[in-house]
Every structure is written in C-alpha cells, then in structure tokens.
Image 1 (cartoon, helix red, strand yellow):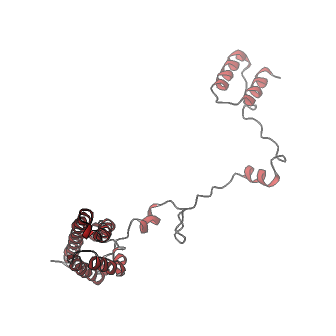
Image 2 (cartoon, helix red, strand yellow; image 1 turned 120 degrees about the vertical axis):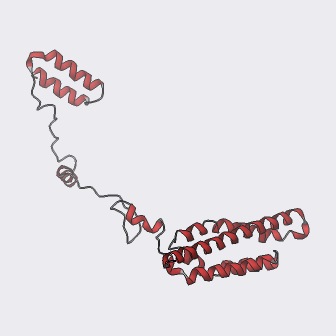
Image 3 (cartoon, one colour; image 1 turned 180 degrees about the horizontal axis):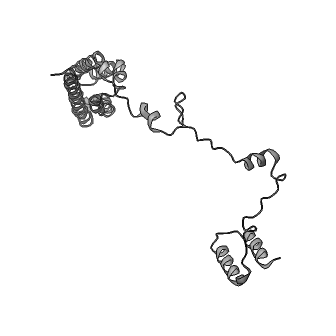
Length: 213
C-alpha cells in the first residue's frame, strides 16, 4: 500500500469517527429534549439537549470536509472551549454517556491535529481569487468594479463642463440622399422614428436633409 493510499484510509477513518460522534450527539440530544419535555424532574436536560443538537448541526459537514482534505479543517479543531462547555453541560444537566462522547471527541481532535499536514486542499472561499474576475483584490479580499477607460470626448466633456462642448453633428445629417425617391425616404424615416430606432430630433434633422431645407 502506497503512502497516499494510507493517508486516504486514515482520513476516511477519521471522517467515520466524526460522523459516529455526530450521530451519537444527535440521538443523545433528542433523548435529553424528550425527557426534559415529558418529565418535570428532567427539565434541566433541555439545556444540554438543545446544546447537543446545535452542536451536531454545526459539525454535520465536517466528515465530508475531512474526506476532501479541506485545509480549514484543522483550525476548526484547535480550540477546546466547545468540548469543555459540552462536557460541563452534560455533567450538570445531561447523561453520563455525554462525558464518554466528549472523550471520544478529544480523540478525534488529536487525530486531526496530528495529521494536519494531510489537509492540503483549499476551501471554496480560499479559491475565490482563481475563479473571480481580474478585478478581485487578493490583498483586501474585496471585489471592486472594473474601471473602464473613458473615451477622449467624455474626458474633455467632464473637464470643460457640459455647456462648453459643442454638440456632435447627427450621424444622419451626413448620409447621402437619393433625390429620386424622396417620398420613400420619408416613409422609411417615419417608420424608424415610430419604432423608436431614432429620436425625434434625428428624424427632424434627416427630414430637413432629405427635403433640402
């Protein structure tokens, strides 16, 4: 068996341990919630039960991330505050089996951290710089809109003010006119205006050009 295959087997085993832990916490949490709801004597168990169910929801995706070698997995196991709180709540308000599962979770944590070098695949969020457009800023992590170059006329218009720039001649005024079919040209021009393909101003300019006014 190659070293790579050994690593894959180890990660699958750790992922299975994590899934088993999640299932146990889910079952334990449901039992605690049911006992707390049905029996007044076990009402404090609602606290531990709710905590355990929430814990499962937060951890449910971890086995899949472990199998994918997600590089963010080791960071999720470095702290022990969550395990300590879980242990205390299950000592005070839960069932003794909760303490055994916490010990099992510490075992999983040790396996993850001792094999942290195996988690080499970047998560989706860390790959964003490879998949986003070129205007993604790798240093700030922010996406900024692309800056388009302005046309020279636009730059001059902004510098001199809107009233200092002479209006551009209409593109219709310079078109050659065939004087043999003035009526046809006028009908075609009217259709373009009615369809909204040209403005009324362009229509009037072109009409005057056709009529020679």
